Length: 145
Image (cartoon, rainbow, N blue to C red; front, side, top):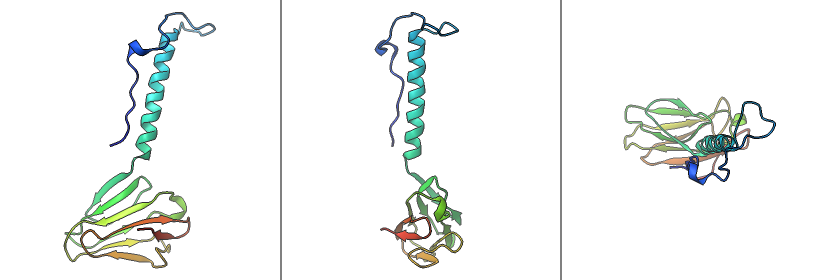
């Protein structure tokens, strides 16, 4: 999943000569400068797109969601699990929490500190594939799906 950028092959360089770039100390050629630009751009875009990919994590015990997470798959086979949301003031992401097991154990989604989710301090997922998608206004959490 995701986009991966790589540097162009050498034979596609638009600047193929070996003339030195005027005013540059160290004898950098136009071709070497173009190779550096290609490599830097590939690294930049790979980092950018990696940050945009939603992270999926699987949990079997209590867990506090990080701002890097997106989807939290919860297996409560061994016992009840509490998933704590990050502080609403520091989160700009939407999160999806899914209960994946078919036991009678529950997954409790808990707002950070006194923050609420649709006005409640917790939301309980009790059946297999129960799921919520939540977002924040910077103060409280809201179920969007």
